[in-house]
Image (cartoon, rainbow, N blue to C red; front, side):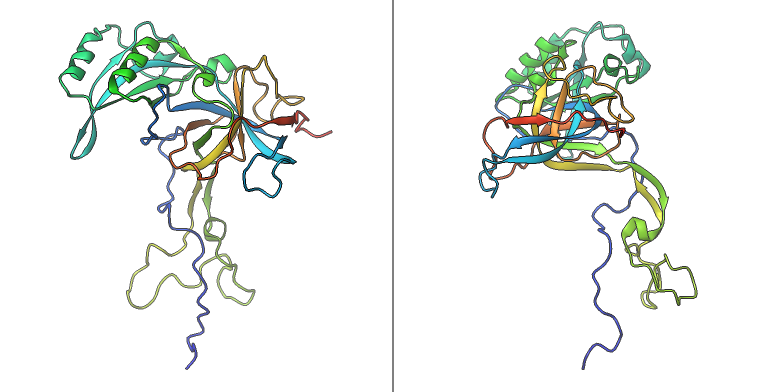
Length: 336
């Protein structure tokens, strides 16, 4: 016999991968995983999303049908003012995961950091941190960094976050961090053109939305007695309860998302090539510091913080070398 229930076996609408879709606790995304690197450097760098434009470049993808030809590519412009390494934090591997053992803060930090937290006045000796390492209490280290949005005239309060450090041995990492404690680090010291990165951010918040926009369910026909932009049935007789998988209204957007394997097309200082469009970026303005061009779109609205880190699962067939850009659009986004 055929299907007599009238059910057409329609696949469910909307992915449950990120359920529950609640608002993020902070506008700064949280990254706890970093790739391993033999090169001694920071494994990530934050920036502020300025807007989008487009470029023309030579297609250097090894298996593309347009290889060697000039192609049109949309790019996101991320302004990356220098960051400051303000602390080093030691971790120990336990049965419950990584646990903080000790940390050491740099002296003479910026007064703007006091807008975010109480900066300690007493500076402890770094020898205490090294003694914990010599005793075998520390298995890995990470650094605490903060941004300088005042340099790009965005805001006064900096953003504080944690970042991984690459290196072959723990001694190399600690030596690297000790030399840079309290000093500025530019994006050119971390990334270069052609690198594959993961971009993390908090998406645009869209507030309380119905199930059609939130989950993509079908709008019912005009003959229904109740509202048309609702689910037809919220559950069966058995089990006699509403399942969590039923599409319901609720919060949409303002959630942490990570875009994997985004290619950096250019890392430049502002005085080398200025990509600010005529009249400035919409809802952002003009660039005042270093910037990064990333292929494709990035989560979040303009002015929101975006974290870039080395790709943790890079693609198998990666283009080699820096991409060759032949044109960068600086046309105004405000229209004629």
